[in-house]
Length: 281
Image (cartoon, rainbow, N blue to C red; front, top):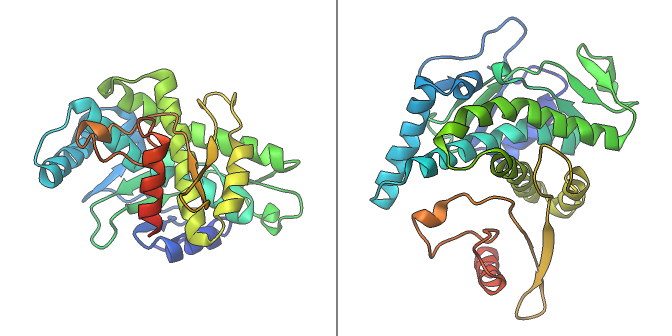
């Protein structure tokens, strides 16, 4: 099933070049979203029933297989939500970052399969319900286009599009997690920022991504909690090392307290420097 929507085709093709472990397809007009096998509809995750149970069983089995122990149910739910939300946010942020187009994906327009062979991040099938773009974009003549005034208006479209997609999904996961409300939207903030920041590094545009994300999430942009929160540390030889302060915790520390990530709220700056240097090496 090829990427067939002209507003997003180039963006997703570029994403596939740098991140081949994630597959993105766009069903053609009149085609149904894929179902069966490993596919789960985002709307089913939002419903919070048996399909969400089955989805989280994958995370439960993965933790037992890789770490030889069981995780708390709320930790499993946190892992599952992260593994869905990280690529789901890229569906919106990558077209914005690369081509200044912001597609809309209600939950009923996206399906996810993380069992596909050769795709460790899974594959997503997504049908835009429309998209926003800037004046002068050739895509403004396409069906479903909505022209907005300027860059700030387009940033507002990104925030709205991510919220439209994630709000029902967060509601579906919420009862299985100890965190609610602000904590879940803090997690959404982190997924937006860290997903695009990572992919922008693969594009060779990490510095531009930092600037763009600071404008996108400057703080006080409800329902999001926190801001992009980038900052710079200094390495032992005076080299600049970029990090950020997460608005949420991924809960991995419950499995490996000594092996937190470089942006974890529990990681002090000295340990962050060590982790960043080890990653760079």
